[in-house]
Length: 118
Image (cartoon, rainbow, N blue to C red):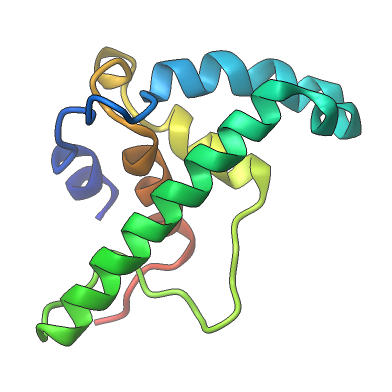
């Protein structure tokens, strides 16, 4: 399933942050711990994740409504830790990180944590 998520990655949208940039900004923040909250990069990355999450949720709900199997199946109250988000970004092959956007890396993290049964 993870291979399908990686293979299905479209080219990054013009206004979306790519995975390479996200990792470039996110890796140093992970080392700062709680102090990362005061960084402008933290706010930028948080906004990227919020936008990508909303897009992925819309896609998932549309797939369900159309009778298609969604790419991930989260429980009603769920979420990802910063470590899980970063692991999803790191799972994007290095050769694709400039072309893949944050939504692609986030999709990988969601598929890993919330696979659909059957």
